[in-house]
Image (cartoon, rainbow over all chains, first blue to last red):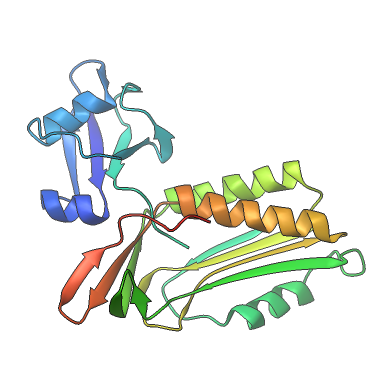
Length: 77
Length: 144
């Protein structure tokens, strides 16, 4: 099983990555997912994250099959 | 309740009229609050030539449906409509429409304000502005 990871907007451009799949090995948090897929890049200020399209915090748990998304503050409307 | 994310231009006032014409609540609503957000040709002192609007397909629609349901629970509403553009926009293009129907004005005014503020602060959309000398991501929205 894998975790799907997605990046949006300025974060997608700065990381040069829109999505990737991470093998699920053991229980991990959203922050640990960030560290694995970005090779421990520092967390951007005001980073937002979602699991399965719901807002979560960096300390929330991720399970196999989840879709994790990272993105900057939103600017719609 | 209806939510639409679209990548082509729309005319918000025609959209309000078309939606209202099909409302089952005809005769019950005495108040309709309409908010239209339109693209400006300036931001933070610079001329803005065009804009790209990105969203998170699926999460954006889910979030707008959630806040619409919350508004229905909090106020006495007969119906609501949200339309939001994505893709390439030019100055004077409508970006967003929020319309709310209720029996009395208090519910429509307050619910439309709530929907717009929730949309602006948490719905996953991102604006990229095209300036005369390059482009930049908008980093935050102005306070409501």
